[in-house]
Length: 279
Image (cartoon, rainbow, N blue to C red; front, side):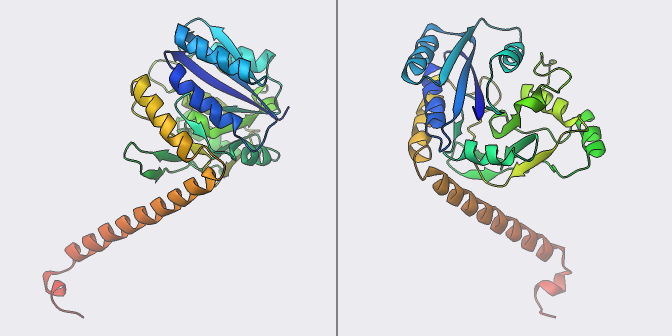
């Protein structure tokens, strides 16, 4: 088995869940197993998860009761005892994989322990923004120092994959997150603190990231409508190329806006006589 994907879900998220799972089933790499990790799901979400299991033997549903936090210990138990994949990925039930996510990340993880793809966010106005990615080229000692200071770890869950054997070398693995910290950032901090860790970045967008405020954010019906729109737009064959083109356009537009601001600032900072006379 090449990849294990953990897809955490909770409460009434069934209508959103089906679109996230569809994006996994449309991957160009077919050798994967998907664990839907329930954390106190509703009857509707349970029925949706069971239907997804019935439709694809690669999908499994783990119906855990609501955890004290975000189900971190259940994730650890699954990776320790159930996972068969060479590499491990994650997918928030609100997000979507582009068709080449697993293929590109698996290839990258043949020469490193942990990787993430290009960070982008698809805003609610339809614009795609490129986000700053952490510098993965730092020396291990400096990276460990940064991790202790909670730097370089603001990478959303869906973008990250790591090797299973690397996970099993960690001192703790997934554990209960202290109050006030993001669950994924707390986990990545543990990885980055290890001096043996080899990290990398895949400089292609592979995830449609649909963050809409901190948890719980948008209502489930609103999320479902949005997921349906973007699974039909980008979660189809060739959708990754369309998304890449949209990202490229966004980067150029962002650069043009930045250049305009710089030009405006330079003009304002000139002596007043230079604004009217050329040198």
